[in-house]
Image (cartoon, rainbow, N blue to C red; front, side, top):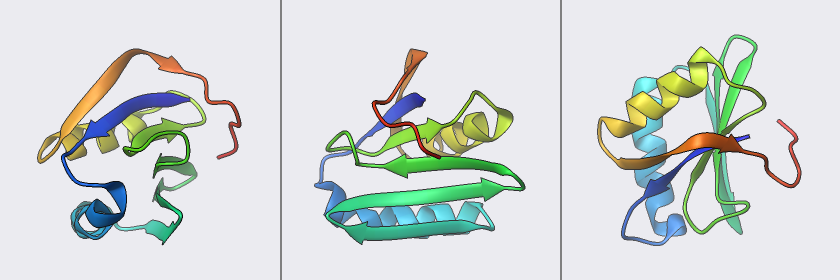
Length: 97
């Protein structure tokens, strides 16, 4: 499910490093990659939130289901970045978290 989308002026591949530094400063366990698309997985125990550009030119905040961790990730991102939170989560074509 897609819960929100980030807004920033640069292309996602130029923004990837800055976002990685920010997320690493706020979360203990993240995985990331940049190969065609930019992606991050942010873990909290068994919960995983994804930020990726798989279906958009800007990073979208995704989770398999609504949870406290996705809300924490959104609130943390909002400390520094513009994040457009969807009124209702959108179903992504291929939901595989």
